[in-house]
Image (cartoon, rainbow, N blue to C red; front, side, top):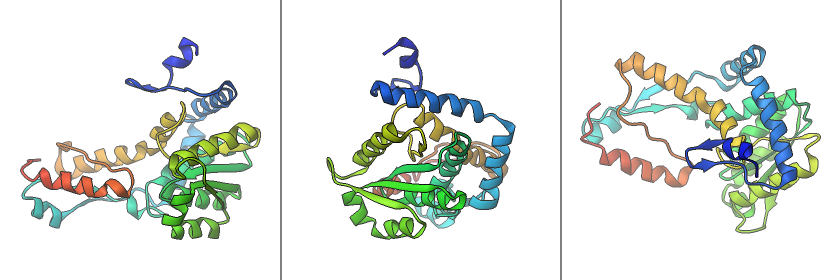
Length: 254
């Protein structure tokens, strides 16, 4: 691995691109196209159009009055990503990446999904733009999230149940990357989380930054200052831990 590759895509000690050479070539093309378009005025205008007119942004920053009273003083605001079209933040990234895929000439979109929200968002975006859509999902996850599988298929996506490994999200990512290596000439991998090889974490970070941009402006309008703490969760499994953390902060003043 060259020093140039090793220096790219790091967040502190984390990140990088530890992948086979043939996949690295695909990632290099993706990075070049992303850097080409992310600050392009026409691309930004189109992205912002769909965020407003299709996703439904900006969404509110809502004071959780009852929870604030329950924890004894810490003012708690909720950024309402659940009010987006498809019901989660995943659609922000899906729209951004599919607009990039269009400019790269892709005709086929592949994605991975765990709980199914990214798969639903990707299938929704593909249906809107008329693109073939294949979603890789661990077999265990397809069973746990059968309703989201139904939603993806209803939107025209093909859902592939991955039985390799543990049949979970990691294995779905691996299968999607294998697909990309074999079909990169007409396929765009629309990765949904800040995982995988560079430049994907940077791409996802970029398209999801709309959440923090809105939140910062909204909290300053409401409170005149930035929050003491910001808490986020990743996946329903950790929501309970997040709520417990909020409750433990009951004496925090804002």
